[in-house]
Image 1 (cartoon, helix red, strand yellow):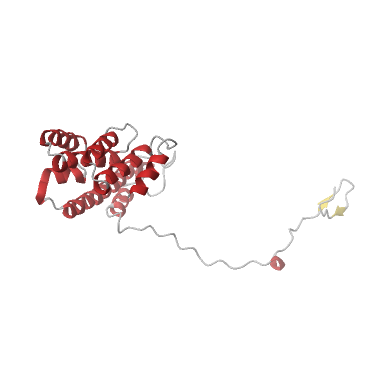
Image 2 (cartoon, one colour; image 1 turned 45 degrees about the horizontal axis):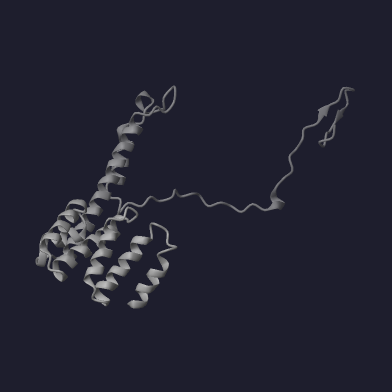
Length: 214
């Protein structure tokens, strides 16, 4: 672990700003779990949590790490409570917020499964809404100045929209199939015939065949 800490320390001066929080998070974990330096770990975790270049996944881990240090290693419940409030307010739907809210009875696996099901439902609703919007646009789109034969008013009827909605109702099961094309016969160069140029009458009245010459 010390080797990881030193490698991160050497990389920090030349690291891109968006990579710095990840390196500091690695150092904080080493300080807490490998070197048993909770005060230094808490300082590093807080730097990660409030780094403007940290993405949400890294920032919430830094905030949760600081919360654990103050709660379990430094015995500072007031500070831990402030960090917990900040985390549950800023990252309310994160697994870390769920762990703080539920405490010792938290079932993280069950929570992650619920998040997965909710995401699938959200994607299905988006696909269904997109299909309905497609149907509305198609129903009101003119097909030509004179209209299409068999369709009243030259507009696509509700049947096509209903088909679009039906096909997008279950995006996990529907897979569009390519149209079937009739088998193509191979064409050989020997079977191609040169174009036939009809004879033309010259200005002198005789019939001449032009083979492409003037």
